[in-house]
Image 1 (cartoon, rainbow, N blue to C red):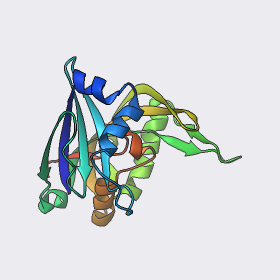
Image 2: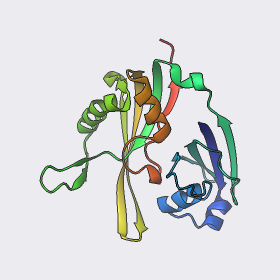
Image 3: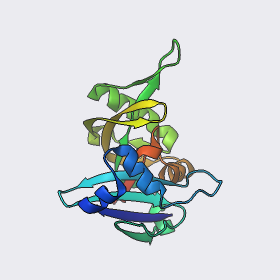
Amino acid sequence: MIASLLKLSRSDFEKLRINDPYGIHRAVYSLFPKTGDGRDFIFVDKGGNFNERQILILSKRSPEKPDYGTIESKNIPEPFLNQDHYGFEIRLNPTKREKNGGKIVPIMGKENLAEWFCSKSERWGFVTERESLQIQFTGVQTFDKQNGQVTQNVVNFIGKLRVNDRSLFIKSFEQGIGRGKSFGFGLLEIIPLQD
């Protein structure tokens, strides 16, 4: 796996006509021409300051050189994913499917979000230390797409995890977690912790 950091200046944003999450989606996707194998990268907009925006990308192949901005990439060593405990941060669009009608609705409220995340984490290959879990609801992101307007909840989960299924954990790290991965959700940022 390759970790890359795309840095875009204010003028890069203007040249790329980025004014919403869909613009960032287009900029990242332009770095990975279609191969027929589907998307093999995920990303998260880390924000920035008045002069520069940073976008973290995790991919199976090297990104192309961008037309605007700069990109730095490095390979992730295989032993990095062999630890048992990690600190993590992840931006998700937490939703659930209603029983009647199957409509997808957002999950609201910190207690509901904590319960949702902890109950799901085992199928992602890890157990979340509930007492370490911090939840930052940062609002919603909206953008226009061909079929109309898209609205997504933006929630950052930060905490500590213990790996309980290595293969599922690696899959979650490499492929991302949850809905909205093509719009900057689901990249599991991790740092190994000492046992």
